[in-house]
Length: 196
Figure (cartoon, one colour):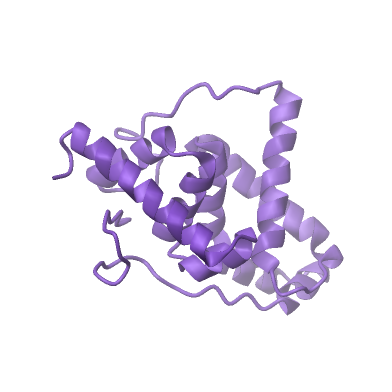
């Protein structure tokens, strides 16, 4: 269960938390066709990459497609990776570029609507019905940058400092956008009488 916690602070809730420590030598090993290294990278980053892609694509099936394409591209381009201390930012860039490429190639410039998640059995990361409602609301009402920060924190368990570093924004900006997004969600859920 993903625990979407609508609190003003981080210290009072339980959620999935882990520090992403990506060994940059994995990319060199992947570039040399080391499948164990590729599997290690995938297992370490898949949840975070899913949250990032979902925040920009806003559709489960398209997210899975781009996620798969992203890892294929990472595998093919790993030999080009230059260690700079931000491997996740490099991976995010690949995912975003693939998304933009898909938009251009499909002539799909407007989003056609959010997939109804409440009854979708395919949405494997979200099993709790209330979490699905909150996720659906998140995808609908938050701006892309707010959605990205909330999903990276709630789905992948990244800390705000990690999010700020990987997105190249100040920590204060990441925190303010996160708290602003939570306020929007709370207000919306109160209007819908889901949260009191």
